[in-house]
Image (cartoon, rainbow, N blue to C red):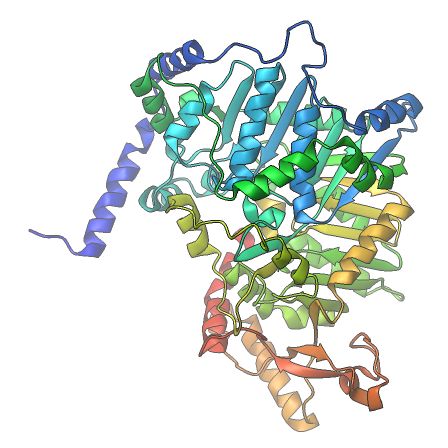
Length: 618
């Protein structure tokens, strides 16, 4: 008898769930795979063992490190920091730092893709290991490499190179859709815990922390969609705290060696001891990679572009969660507590940039407390529009609660998909050619099905906001991986830097406010309505918004507004919604400007209505 598709799915899921108890690699099999990989590992060095510098390239950052360590005391540390705004700069600097490493490299990342950016970094890490540098990498399993053969090649790449995956589903590198569903059904809490940290540490002295993963779109290298993101480089004693945190992850049960993954262990054993060594990749856009590689070796270029503009600051705090984020009842939120304390202590201004304006319960409580003050701090928020985001469902929840945020006094600016600076990004492709499309991948296909872009009215390289940053009272700068949302608070492990320095805070504040300017963002404000109809609409909308489902009232409180310089006889200047001139200088462009979808409003509100219960895991 033939089963219906639904029945077949149920049977398949039951079969997978039944097999879960025995899904781990048995110890004997794992030891055989580890021994085989070790026996096949390259142990030769491209640098003479007596060279204590491991043949590293010269870097002007070494003098900054020496100066910072020399000037630091136990009570008054000194650091030099760079705010890294441009995507290609961020990749170029990472390659430079990897090539400059003399002793060790540690990396944590949420995504490791098999495109040019990802494979370039992998190749450079293996080259560093071949020079004699100890290299360790932890990548979250869910959206990282899913090729068991590539992982097997990495397992035997070199004795100085080790790669582990965080919290693998069913103890495998690859998670096809059926196993993805089984993981959710079987072990929801465990499956939902992801390592969202993004950290690079070189020689325990230079650390990079921020929002960027290892994928083209984080470095302005994608020909369809790129991220507006941000990192902070810190040279100085904070590296010790970063190393301690990394070691905790490395030694935890969540970080699984490659030989302990079922599909990778099988690939290792099938290939055997005589398997070929790790082969460097052929890049899809070789000209672009070659140009970046050349500049990464240019010490004078690095000095002029980065080192000469570095800021001398004092204390830099590295905050991070522990591996396997505890359940909410334990209230151990290492990454959330310092941020909550900073918000509660704010006096005059909070400037916040997050790709997902879906506040956690803790954050909503704090902002309500702040709003009740006699003189509440001014809260400016830079976030994504529906046209710019790649997280459609998360935006739907943000949209649902937009009125609440405005009532808390938030000044909200939603990033445009084609901001003014997009011209520079598009120019990256001129003369170098577009990168060919990547082959099909379960990881990418699954990610795109969850984080889908809305179609737009015009073509071009779309830009989406991905930076996670905050400035408190113009004095404290926060940069990291924390999205200030329920996922970051309750499920993901997160990490970042807190720097109490007015000069750095000013640079960061200027950068975020630049992203809120009319050329780059729409302003969210209350719609103009007649007194009678407006009051009735608000009453119905309030009731609808509070429903966990069926929030389908089509006339919302807020809308997107475009700056109009021709208003007031051409005397208009960009002003906040609280200004008396706001509506004379801005015109309503609707809920979803630039989005080209019939019934988009209805579809989004349906998602909003039925997605409210998912706030805690978005």
